Length: 388
Image 1 (cartoon, helix red, strand yellow):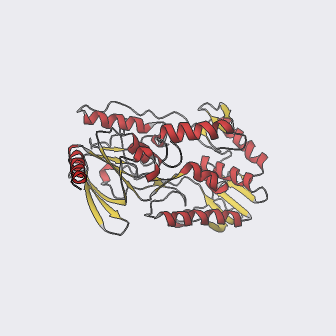
Image 2 (cartoon, helix red, strand yellow):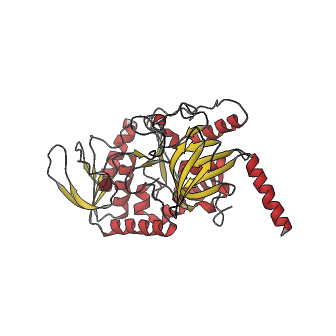
Image 3 (cartoon, one colour):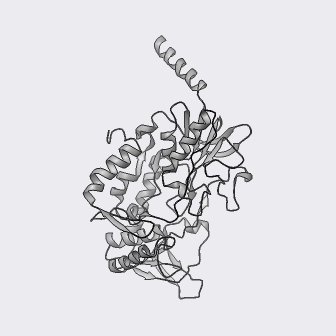
């Protein structure tokens, strides 16, 4: 007993001697940041869910749910790189930049105040039914996911609204998984994937048609209220140009109507849309001890710090601050969108470069090397009980 007490006391002194980095939000970007911060920090992560419920690959999530779960649904306590991170199942309700504290709402509705030396804002954005910040248990999450899959299976007609990468992938993958369902993709322009190279846009238009997805172009739907955008249900589509209404058994809104989760932050940190304003070092302007990363950060129009290795930049800059040096690593957003759009398919994973060039990785390479070795083991550090 004495040895256990001495070990606990030593750990307590060690924590007291180390600067605390508080990471608000433990989605994909928050997890990667918390996992790669310097070991000389005490890292505390605030998560609204006990699982990493990735917002990636909605099309695969709805069409191949078991396959999606393997790569994108992981208990936080199973991620090896998070073993040294203190994870609080809570939501941030306020931040005091001067006092360097954050107020948290816990799962049991109690509140606590946590002091920090450095703060990382990675709370993400809301975007439809698949990205939200409700405080949930694992049982509630599992029930909700099962209900979404059941809704898709029960629908004979599915309308996907929005021609970005999420809408394109969802429409394509649902039609591939359910060839007898009527799947339609509604776009406000003539081609899917605005922001991508023209070659990539034409390629996916032709691919959608070949798959049997009904493409409805140059028709902008009337958006419902916020609750309607987050609902996965059937209904009627109305259009701004007065085109005839369309009824569908299931409507999936993928219009990119992002809502940043920043209501708890002081207004001087935010732009006019509520995103966190940062410089090229991912440092919140006017707050040298606060950083922001991911979809919540107004780094560029596409908020590309959610990808493109931005967490490495942030971790390097916090390490510099710990050494008494100013941040020097810069995040430079890519000039065009690139990467995978449809996710893993039976014939492999197709990637598209910024100029429209494309190449395919065979499925065996993705399933046996890219995902388990590069992504899960190298980037995320492996998962206890799943791989080493």
